Length: 310
Image (cartoon, rainbow, N blue to C red; front, side, top):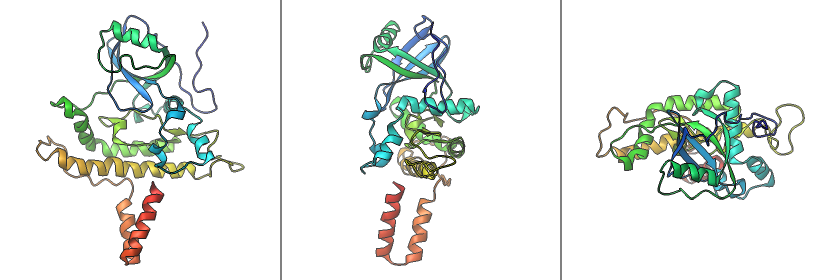
């Protein structure tokens, strides 16, 4: 039997293949999760007595929505090479591979390796376990690559329809640790790039499909002659974008929505305020306004600041 390689094959961190056999009878594919994901489909599975999430990547890199990173702006060829050289599957292999090699798996959900199954094999396992509903026949034909991850439960809540929103509201308890973990990822050479609440479950980072990990064939060089593709400060800039995203899309998102969510609901110990600052967006705007002292100048500077951050 041919030994499976660690992926991806390019220079850099790699993820080992999953050691088990997903087609074994003790492996049950319980259901396809109804989650909004542009890159993959998640299957809830039971292997022995433990629950796992297997993310099968169903979207090729050419189909990834570039607006998630750059908004509506046109891309330069150097950006395209940097962004889409690796597929979302390979991005996760590299990021989680780096966490494994550095013994830092506590920063995100624990993964156990990559797998490859055909759409028919996946559907057969789902049917055998009695799975029904949406997504059962939604896998594209051919071989699909996936990653086996620990199953992470959302914070318990009595209303199943509001459980996902409640999980994002409860996450405020984990914000300080989540922010420290982002800094640790940056220290290990990983930038998340599309950071938002959906990537966390009960405060655990579970999605790194758009992450970029050093070294990169079209990324900046660490030493010697400068790369013709990306300037040396590329990863520093992307790391700053991660912090900006955490401030705007996680902290500020929570500040706005928690007031609405808990207007007629009991907080049960969930804090009313959050003073954590990941990126001083408001402070920068205030400093520029005070320095200029003219409303027209303030608006112009604010717009340029906002567009630069985006």
